[in-house]
Every structure is written in C-alpha cells, then in structure tokens.
Length: 374
Image 1: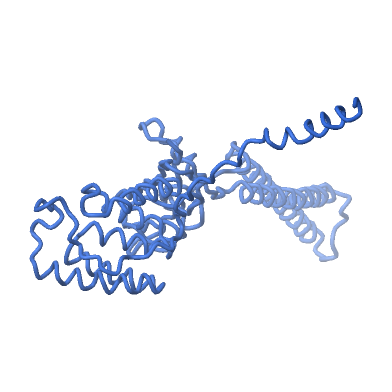
Image 2: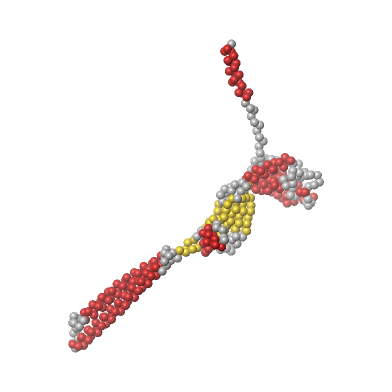
C-alpha cells in the first residue's frame, strides 16, 4: 500500500507542472511596415465619404474636376492592386491636380510605400489625415496614423546655408539652391553629403564638401558652407625672420670685392712706377741695355705691385663667394606661399566678431562648415 501511495504521489507531482504552465500569450497584431505594404485599394471607392454636406476638401472644386479626379483615382487603384506602383503613383498625382482629396493622398502613399520614398509618403499621409477620419474610412485613418508614427522614425531634418554669392549648394549630389540662401528639408536618417561649388561666373575652383555624421531620427542638423578664394587663404612665410641678414652678407662680399679692386689699382700704380724708373734708368745709360733691379728700389716696387695684385685677386674670390652665398641665402629666405585653413582665416577675423568655422580647404576654392545637432 505504501509503495502504491508513493507511486501515485510521484505521478501527480510530475503531471502538476504541466497544468500549472500559463497559456501562451496571444500574438500582437502586426504593425504596418513603413517601407512596403500589400494593402489594396477598394474596387468601388467613390471619394464620397464625408460628414454629410460639410466636405471642406471639396470646397471650390468643380464637379468636372471631381469627376476627372475620380476617374484617374479609380484607374490608379487598378494599377495599385496589380502592383504597378509607378504608374499608379503617376495617376494619383495627376488626380490630385484636379482635386486634393485625402483619399487620393492616402492611396498615393500606399503606392509610394512600395517605391521606398518615405518622405513623400509622410507628406501624403499627413495630407490624408488633415480633415480627420471623415473623408477616409475609419480603418484607413487609423492605419495612416500608425504609418506616420513609424515613418517619423526614419526622418531627420537638415538646414543648409551658404552666403557665397553664386555658389551652387548640393545635398547628396543634387543642387538645392544657388547662394546666398538657406535650405530646409527632411531627409532619411543616416549620413548625408553637403557640398558647395563655384557657380557660373565665379571662376575656376574646386568643390568644398563634408560628409555629416549619422543624423538620427528627429534630429535637426544645421550646417553652413563657407567658401573662400585662394587669395583669402594664402599667406607667406620666410625661413628666417631677419630678412636683412642675407643682404648683409651680400654687402660684405661687395665691400671685399671693392677693396680687391682698390688693391689692383694700387698694384697697377706700383707697376707703372716700376716701368717709369726702368725707362729712366735706360735713358741715363744711353745704351738701352736695362737696369739692375736691385738698385734704386726697383725690386721693391715690383714686389709691392705683385703683393697687391695677389691680395686683390684673393679678395675678388672671397668677395665673389660672399656675394654668391648672400644671394643664395636671400633666395632661400624668399617669401613662400602657403594656404591656411578656413578656421584659421575666421580666427583672424575674430576681431570683427566673425564666427569660427570647421574648415574644408581645397585648391582654387575652399569650404568651411559649422555643423551640429540640436
């Protein structure tokens, strides 16, 4: 009996946990995917939903325009249901030119969802709910709001400005305006490239561009593109601050050369005196047989001339070397051009109250950026 009770108790303990387990949770309904949808358009949509006779979205729209829009709307619905999203979107856009009906905006958003154009989708969904649920079915109104919440997580905001007159400003390779001016837009979250390049009439130059860090959902990223001319960013430097030093060397060398020239003149004078005395000696003997150079100081005159001439030639050499060295130093110390950064240029202008910018410097033209997230 004891063994039987023990066996029954063990079986109960093994089975009990099975009954104690909670039932699996009911799966939550799937939220709409903000990048695609398989939602179909109604086959008999008539754009006639509304709050009785009060239809502000129809105010000022003629009956003819309403009928034209309705025909295009229905054609677009067929294409939407057949998966021809580009054709459907084109027909919806044409229909909106005749009648800006929220239901057309909604179906255009459905087509664009499948074409991966979240910004235009968001624009159309916001237009679709502009008048509340009245012009839409309640279910569509609720879905539109769900889509908007999801799409807002894919959108960031940018503000791009440039004051360089005539510059073309580009965002992700697409020209958005010609400076001076400012551009505000919504973009996908992620990295974006902002650029400013010389426009017509600005002369040759190069693009200044920057790739922004990752811009997150809901962030507003402000950036100023500032372009500089080469002249504005060009500075000059020398190897030595004492620009006079090489010219002192040149001047010293010139002085030595001049001294050598004076010695040569003096040497020539000594030779002239020597020749004169030799001529006088010959004239005195009447034989033209020459004179003894050791008599009458003739040798001293010749030796003096030789010494002066040698010293003069040496000084010519020394002075010439000094002049060459000085000119070489002057060439080395010539002004050499270099480019500063845009940030450095702005810092130089700080006294005028200008803002320092983060630079992008390139040949010909350069750009500098102020950017940040707020």
